[in-house]
Every structure is written in structure tokens, then in C-alpha cells.
Image (cartoon, rainbow, N blue to C red; front, side):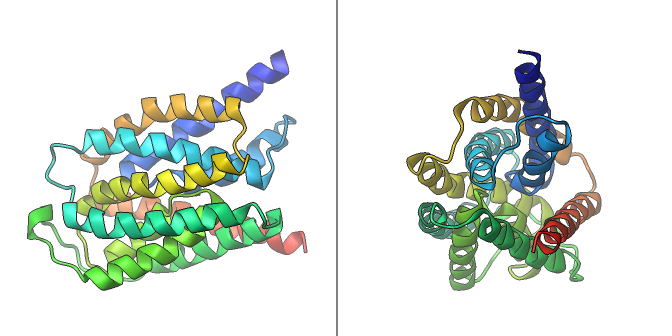
Length: 262
């Protein structure tokens, strides 16, 4: 029983920390929770989750974490309806394709896909960009580019059980030139839409262990709105650096393990 309680506490804390940061920087949190769920339980001598289980738990958790984040941003003027619509639909289609196909992939392939997405996101986060401050109704963007990139991200994200926000955020900042706070708020909404596809696919293919998923959902609903409130008050440059460091660290960790396991 002590073993089970310690595992539940560990999963809750991973979900809480990931969802708090998720709400702050506009991601679903899988970039943080995927490696933590994959490595922390085994490091503590607890039951280790497989890559398929981690991707399943992450998919369900992201769905609930983003609901809380979007709710916190509902009256701020930073939710861009058109951007959310175009990228949300495209990433949803991609995530459904990726999540249903993921059950046929080995754990090694899932980790490699995740590592590739993390590297691309890390590179994009360090590309210099102008600081732009504007409300959502003042922003224009290329709808075709946004839709195509969101579709591609959705496929990769569906495979690893992420909603893809850790890659969508750099794309919105760097390629679409969306201001940081609008990016954070809108990416939470886009990530919520994306997570619908990932969640359906993971549950349908039996990749979601029930109890850990429920624990992560509870922690997400508590922490994500709190993180969103904090993020609205924090300097945008600091938020950008937090995201860049998290993505880079995760990419290094994932690829280190992939290389040493070859």
C-alpha cells in the first residue's frame, strides 16, 4: 500500500508541476511531464511506465490542463479566434491520425519522434525575433502556412501523446509573428482542440492506465488555472526563456537516452 501511495503522490506532483508551468507558458505540459513520467518513477524504485503508457497519460492530462488554462484567459483579450480555428482544426486532424497510428510503433520510435520534435522546437525558440505587443483583434497571419504547419505538428504530437503546443508556440512566435501573450493564450485553446484527437486515439487503442490518468487530471485542474494567472503577470521575456530552457533540456535528455540505448 505504501508503494502505491508513493507512486500516486509522485504522479500527482509531476502533474501539478507540469500543469503549473503549462498554464504559465501556454503549453499542454507534455514537454515536461513526458520525461518526468518516463524517468522519475523508475529512479525512485517505483513501477516504471512504458512509453505507450506515458504517452496515453499525457494525452488525457493535456486535455484537462488546457481547459483550466483557457478558462483563466477567457476575458483577457488574448484569445485569437481565427488563429485558434485554423490551427485547431488542422492540429486535431493530425493528432487523430498520429494517435491511432502510434499503437503500431515501438517505444524506441515514439521516443525518437518526441526527441525530433523537441530539437526542432528548441532551435526555433533561440531564433531572434522582435518583441510585439498587441491584442488578438490587431493581429494578421498567413492562414495556409498556419494550417499546414499545425497539421504536421498534430501528426507528430499524436504519436507521442502530446498536443504539440511545445512546437506550436515556437511556430507561432517565430514564423507567424504572433505576440507572446496572444501566443500563450491561443496555444492553450489550440492545444485543447488537439488533445481531443490524441485522447480519443490513446483511449481507443488501450494506451491509458486509468488511475495515473485520473490523478494527473486532478492535479491539472488545480494547477493549470493557477499557472495561467501567474503567467499573465510575468514578463514575457522570462516566459520565453523558461520555455526555451525546458524544451532544450528535454531534447538533450531524450537524445542522450536514445543514443546510449542503441
